[in-house]
Length: 136
Image (tube, rainbow, N blue to C red):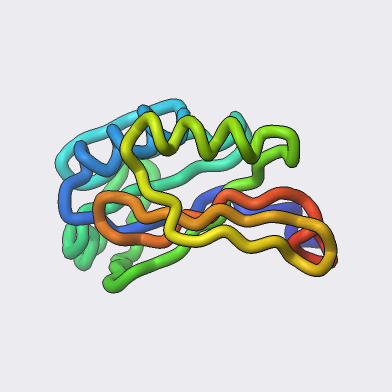
């Protein structure tokens, strides 16, 4: 028995539609669903980025299959997305074309690279290549 990966990661946002548009149009994630409370986006067709309206999930949510417990978050949260090393410049160009500032770039001792930027809610988004961590 073992954990096999992270399937869902969530961020909390003021405006779900605005955030979903950013992650779809700027980062190229596929939008799976969106409503006033949340959006779900496909990450590499094997993981999910969930965007919840801040304060929108502080009560349990009934579904036909059971109850989803409450959760919420605040502040400048962080998410990192894997990119390929040859694509770093292409990402720089894509972000510039979308008028999204790169807040910082880091070259790591193991050879990896990170591009840091902010989403519309000031969450820190990292685009990182292999060589950042011992396991990545």
